[in-house]
Amino acid sequence: MTRQGFTVKYKQEGTRLFEIIATELGISKKKAQAALDAKQVLVNGRRIWMKNHLVKEDDLIEILIEEHAPTIPNKIKVLWQDADYLIVNKPAFLLTNASDDSVEARLQKQEKNKNICAVHRLDKETSGCVIFAKGEKAKAAMIPMFKGRDIMKIYRAITVGSFPRKWTEIRTDIAGFMSTTLVKTLDSGKQASYLELRIETGRTHQIRRHLANKRYPVLGDKKYAGSGIELSLVQPRQMLHAYRLIFPHPKTRETIRVLAPLPPDFKKCLAQLKLR
Image 1 (tube, helix red, strand yellow):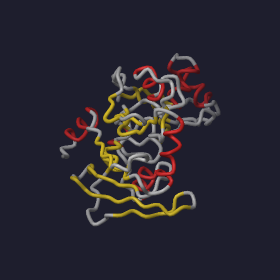
Image 2 (tube, rainbow, N blue to C red):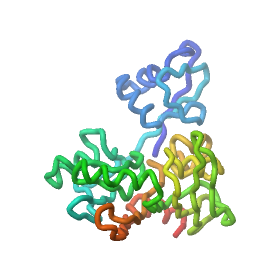
Image 3 (cartoon, rainbow, N blue to C red):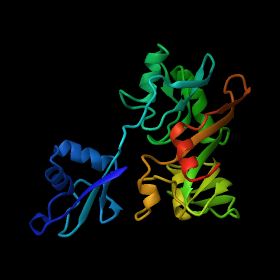
């Protein structure tokens, strides 16, 4: 990513952030808001995404600009399917559902089945395994498995800093519920680490919050990585990938095992950091 920046002048103090970005960059307020929504705006080195944030004199405003638009494949890769379900390798930068351009919407067209619906979701920037049902009845049969511990969810992540190999479990309270993430260090260097993680509970942003709480946030995490971490700021997305799913089929009880290969941007990041 490159940066485009400016310093707030005395007469501009008290202006709303999205307005001053629009004025200084000569873009529409809608585009300025889009940059804030994408968490691509820094104020004095800190990510700010509130449109009504008021700027002060001498504030340094920087907008992170992606040199190349993210590559999203035209076809969603189906990793496994049967009569009731399909599991796909979700690309980063697509919503799982609730959008006209979501993975769910694309699958409905691709598979010519308007009944396809997401059983669970991944964050927009997270890639990897997602289960879709081919109808509401199949979805209803799968939901209780997510509420229990029937589904083993394994992730791969690149994190900031040299993660201590002695930590094999992170257990903290998230929103009033005890949450557990099991950690295996695959490789580490001075700048970053490559981890495999298994979540025993399914709290919102659990892996990202747990790692940030230990001060080893996911590389590129715009919400939890904090400020001043240059290595994280230059990443186009959070380096988190839903690598593997293992679960008993709700109908047949057969053990289903599915692995989503690491995407090119994730492998490129590992190579740049000399992690494997």
